[in-house]
Amino acid sequence: MCQFASVANLAHRARVTLEAAKEAVTALEGVDENSSDPDNEGRRIERVPGGWIVLNAKKYRELVTRTVIKEQTRARVARHRAKRASNALKRTSNAVVTQSDTDSDTSEEDKSSSCSEASPSELTILEFPVVRSDKPWRLTARKLAEYEGSYPHLDVLAHCREARQWAIDNPSKRKTPQGMPAFLTRWLGKAQNSGKGISKPIEPSLPDRTEELGPCNTDEVFAALKARMNAPKVSPLNSFKLQ
Image (cartoon, rainbow, N blue to C red; front, side):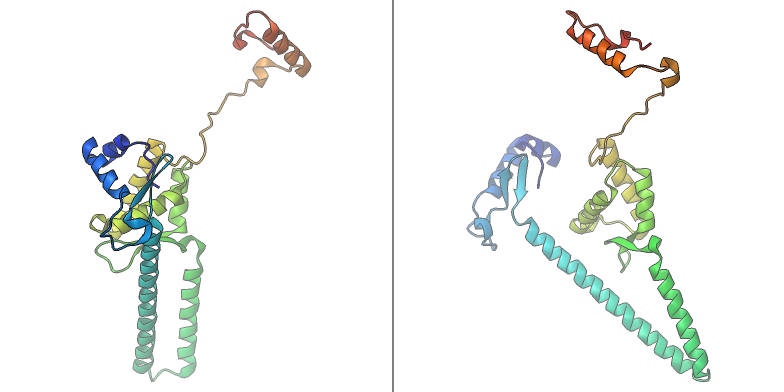
């Protein structure tokens, strides 16, 4: 959903004139007889309380998701085939090695690989498309926990998903694997500074004045407060001192 209450806000965010924004909104809300998509009579957006909703967003989101899953499956199958070819080459070149030694080495290699894959801190939470690399950049559980510690009042995972979708939708602006940590740091920093995505209010810490005020009687406090509330003129509460 596009959360802009008016066309003026939308024009300001898009950095275009108000007339251009009105023209664009009218075109996107109108019927398009030449549209290749028969759904919604070719309309792209629809006005809802608080802004607009993209009518075919779900369709294209599912399309991108299927494309990503297909690419991940292709990469996984390629790695599996490369590993099998590498193991076959090792068996051929080491034919003089006894069968028991080969089995032992292979078992230890598989155990080491299993241990590394099972490490909770290295589990992949999200994968980001990047440039200058055939493999996506992995956001691990360890890195996510690091970001959550630095930005405790943000929904860090939700903002990372938003950044990942931005990278999918903007191929020309994708980062290198080395630049991804700094990119996410800037993304989360902007969200925190703008107040966007604050998951819980920041509660100020108050000083403990128990020793200063001393013990108090709850009934006396309530009685005094009630008397002040019924008085013709209410004086500031900070003038009331507990005995």
